[in-house]
Image (cartoon, rainbow, N blue to C red):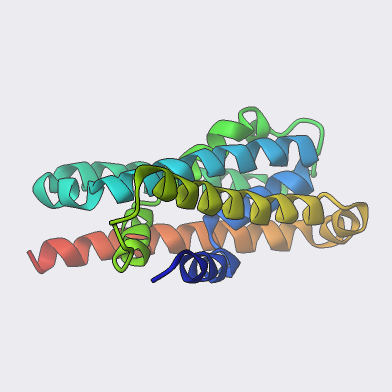
Length: 204
């Protein structure tokens, strides 16, 4: 599997809406582009860590120490539930784009949202499974940079799109419905993580 194919697979994976997409779009809509960009940087750092760990064989570590995987999964799930709680709590409140409690630390929000997705290690491990590891250190480093740059540019485009004034006006008309859907997406993803973890324990 060459670099181009890996980049293509990663692009299609990015196009599937998930927690990263919703956290970036929410910040762009509810705050501003600057805060959304901070979220993108946080996500990109987490992506970099997952890629490096995948190449370094973190999957082997999880196989030897399954408790580490469980703890990270619950950390990510708890955080997404917290985000869903904030969205649902604000449904009956007037929208305030100037003072949003969950926009205080956008970089950390982006980082934790992505790093809490334990499935990333299996995703990156799978796309690296056919990689020719005869490549030298600098060549593999170049691949890491390409994947992180691809992720960053995609989420940057999402931030730019949803910080557009016209898009924000549309959001204002349907903000409660969109918040409710986003909360459901986060909760659904948490249920998916927990059910997957339960299935692994049941089959152990």
